[in-house]
Image 1 (cartoon, rainbow, N blue to C red):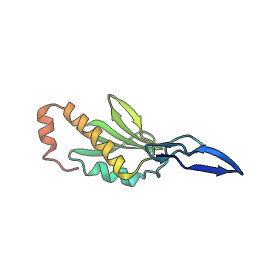
Image 2: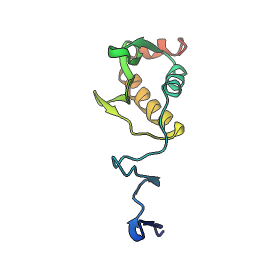
Image 3: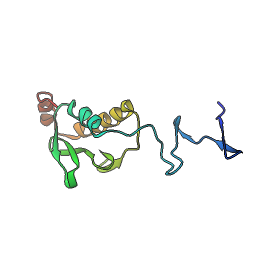
Image 4: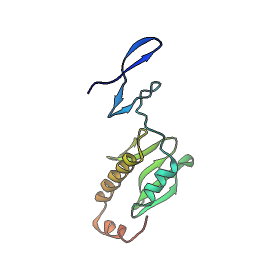
Length: 124
């Protein structure tokens, strides 16, 4: 598939830079889909069994699973992956939900079996 050329200032520019089909922001080079809202992230996290929202540092929202941090919402959305925080670039709501659910399932599987069983009996 050929990338379309973009004409800027009466000269031919290179192909429109994209990451996985999403145009890059010319200023920062980050993939731009649209901004992820705090409300959307909170709704996604709230529907996961056993999650709890607690006040994080500096007014951030912090979602936990069995008292283990899972998602942090501040100036950017971060998920806990592999023992560290990973900042998520702007993405669609569908992709955002997938990333959060993958982080949730990884953390859930790392918990002891009796704790996992108790999560099924709690609501998000």
